[in-house]
Image (cartoon, rainbow, N blue to C red; front, top):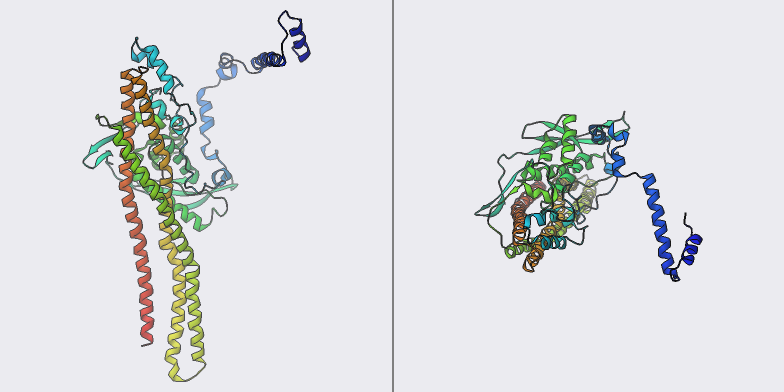
Length: 522
């Protein structure tokens, strides 16, 4: 074994010239590396030795996978499920998903083979230059880069197929053939492990088959993760925030139910998400074994991230990259201004809600106390002439106090539903910048490949194939932009109609009561 003294003595006794301290340090480091290499071989056998170990040979693969997935309901404790605040959900919704399981190696080994013999070496060099230096960007981690460079290795056919068509209104997802709805209702507290763990389960009923299933918050959270990983250019609505304290209180449970209802409604209205295999499994599966099999299949799905674009059928016409860029830039500007406006609207409605249940209620009830005091003063005089006014003042005090309570109740009828809708839309907007950036990286990759083609470092055939794949992502991006624009109109029409209808009924009720009071003084 080489220690420092023996190593230095060996160096001095050699016929080589005297070494300085830097060279000696390098030799010492090399000796340590050789020692560590021998230790790693002793403690960590090679892959061939591992594969031939008796424990592995005698363990069927099905047992290993079943041990991982069969305890789905025990994967998280309640603290894991609820224990962290949701980054106030908005503006922190990064779509940094795991890299696809089949994105392929970091080099396009098959590029040279497809390009022909004459340009094989040049193409291989071009392919290595096409790889993004930043391997931690969403563009890389979602598998979008591997899809564009045809580095994905698929081992099974896709289970989903989606079509994008060109209509008089523009590029759109193929419309939903069978519309359906889902209802989230009947939250109930359940427990397991003889009461040691408790949780809230919500019923989810689909009009597809009328079957009612019960899902916990962690099941919704798992589904949200699966959808976000698979559909990288589709914004997934936010779930209600996680919370530890008071999670069994009635108001929080009702609030969560309302957000979950908005969430499932959004999924049902989307042409792609409404047909997603994992979503259909979520709302229809009632058998525990089938649930676990479906969960395992979703988590092993190859067609996630960039590989999802293998599931798309798009028009054959090539897209003009400059036109696509202008359309996406316009959408990005709209999203930016909408995000600011919705945040301001949310803050104002939230402030109004607090005032309705606080100062507004208090002011009406202070006025009620003032009318009551005035009535008591009239009552001090037993003159029959005062009796009519005294009774009117008492009634006015009673009505004013009741109107104060109505303000508190009204905030739950109009402000809270509007806040829930604005919350959901804020979360949707916050995910769109990441989606746009992923697509912009695809366009940047296309320009880089065009430059390599001009320089002769990439064959024209490969450049054309890359252009076709980028066009598929652009078709998907524009189809999603058109869908979001239509949904935005419908969302805000519904929001404002519901809010103003409630407001009108509320103030009409107050107006009627005040008019009746005025008649008593006539």
